Length: 305
Figure 1: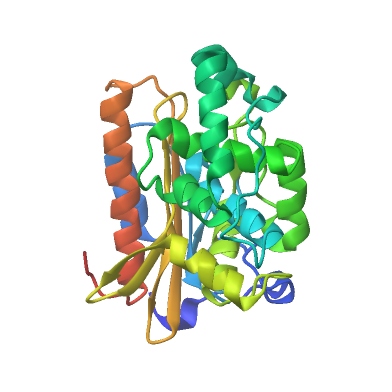
Figure 2: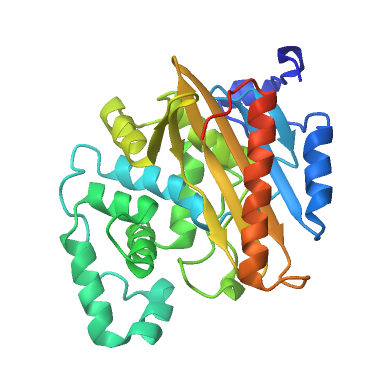
């Protein structure tokens, strides 16, 4: 696909993000790889530059389960609300005891829940961001509990959704409906590929409304995962769920010589199929990674790791 096929939607340019971008022409290699997956699957993709110009957009405005990829938007709101105070604690020891976290109380009991709340309350905002996004040095429970403490700070799922939407019109496809690890029957946390790409693009180019440069740099530090010798710096936050529907998201950007290429690939597959959920999840992960590599290669991003 040549550079002449890049779409530059008028609305995208007006909003400064990727929301409501029209889909591009189907990519035969992408469609062939999806067909080869052999299971019913929904796939949404957005690949383009940090300014919101799409090179590939496939069902980019459809809502799919976002899993933990939605935490990038949580991170923006957390750091923006505590700008200049990222190395100070932000939460009271009684966190995780509200209605959005009642599943924790049922699973852990009062004593363990109180201990977890004290640990979160003792952590700095920056540390909570690292726990919530990278799970660095913590178990899966703390990784998700950190995100739920952030939800509590914003008044729960509805309050967080409102804060995300108020940040930028391009983020409107992101909707928070439940706390992490809560039953999915309460409603899935969803996003469009275009809206996730808008968040990533805004961070990549340092153009988050109402967020100062020092805070943007702190966001980038949390999201940076590696320095690829070929592709450059890699920033990412994906997500996965093995309950119904099985969900895999790869999302981030590669940055080299001041140029960022943003990618989001989302896939959702019903549990019913030829494989157990765990095996099906691994195959779905292989699919989203393969699709990412196809579109990055087509975009002229050299193959690295």
